Length: 432
Figure (cartoon, rainbow, N blue to C red):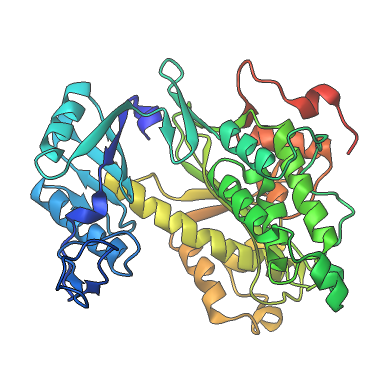
């Protein structure tokens, strides 16, 4: 929204944030070596303030921050407790918080300066100026086009260096289409388990997951599949994980672009029926705001669907939850989005199920919670529209795709190479 409205966006860091929070419980700690004077041996120290590492630290800091913002006449969002806002004509302010990092958006620069001055009455801050980096994400702004681009090239390079893949060959896709990974690839003997003992599989998946949830929806499916083998990974799982990293190496300049068009919310949803060895279908969705991706997911459905229509129907319920959350958040912070939100699906039967109950004999076994989507379609919260599979952006979040198809869907989801950047996958035109 800041990109679309051409508002200022600045970053503020609060120094020693946890120390500002007062403890409500009595907590004692052992004194550090050499702290106690002679004769005080055996004594302990009572904490007056919160410290990083305490179980209560995060909660107490969030309560302190909420109290401070209330004094500054801000309101805490009811749908996202890490967002604070203040409605006041030209001084409309939105602040997003991640522990001690804040991104502040306002229409005018002098109002942002005033906000920082007010904040210094309560905390010692570091004024980081205009937002360029946030939690490892590079932020590039084009004021003329009213867009903000988020990318993680430096983060990808850190991953490659950590796993000694800096000089590895690139891969054209994050996952091989022929890969049928399952528990059968996990170690089944003591010797096989020992061979995998020192393989940093969990760390690799954790690092990839941050990229997949921040700026790289194109690897979300691969990471979702690979994360299912965290407990007992095998060599095949580890090779597939390294393939995702090699894909990121070839597309490290890629990032998502937010804003640019004066459009509202729209969503694409898809499901891949029982293609995995566990027979659970995969749900994938992506939500666009002003033509830029703001939310996406690729995950295994919690139950086994009996048909493609049923799998797609369950996926529609999942995207329904996310759309309602975003509608409420946008309405709370800015303005009410124009209902209904269009949702694009490539399954006619699933769309029919949401509009009436004439297929009752074939759907009466579906859990009541999944009929939630039918109520909200009929109530006008969102409108389902059929789109061909070739145009369904969410297809990239449910299965491994060939390179030409993946390339097309990347463009549709506004995941593009930076201007002046080099995609080593595209330039080499690798057949993988």
